[in-house]
Picture 1: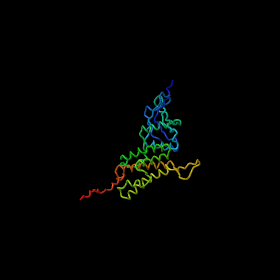
Picture 2: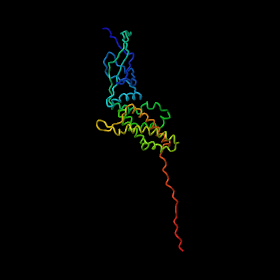
Picture 3: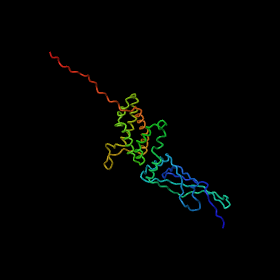
Picture 4: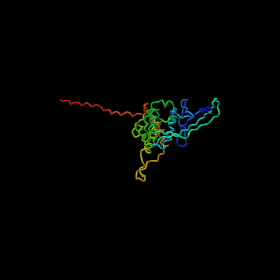
Length: 283
């Protein structure tokens, strides 16, 4: 009985891509010798591969699912390889390409959220790429990241108005009425007036946007249900404002930690001259 020909792997590549167009590759799949599935025979156990996902990959997935925040996450799985056909004499008879059938990997949202917690994913890399080392290493940057965690959670779920309200809340934790320029100027009294004005306009301007767009509705126009209309807000707009809030909030916190942004000292009570009453002389 002739010895059958054997088929063995020369190369095997696996890619996972986002389900939505444009399809973007997510992470890298590492396959060792033990992870090469057998060819020509049935498998007795599952084949395990190592899927390496970096923070920028996570951000790409989060951006892709923003339009469908409540559905499971779908990845397209593309398997391609090259194998050799070997004779009983160990001669290579042919080189063949192999491609797996189209398949899809589904990840439930709860499982995805647990993964984000395990890897410690918080701030999207794109929001820190413009920050210098001195900014990233200062405690104010980490504090701002923590303060805006709820805003980022809302943004990932497509809850853009709530994201802006959380940005506003983080500024309200520093000063009362942060959309009022005078609230900031009052705490910047140690700076030259021109610089204090510029900082106050920067900080109050962001708060004003979050307040008027994310918090308040139109004061006159009503929708078909008779409710006051919300201001129009695109997801990309919330993305820009949330990224800006990371920098602006970190800046405000750093000013506060440096003692530049602080409550003015309470005015001292006016001094009063002590008057000693004298008894009239009795003659």
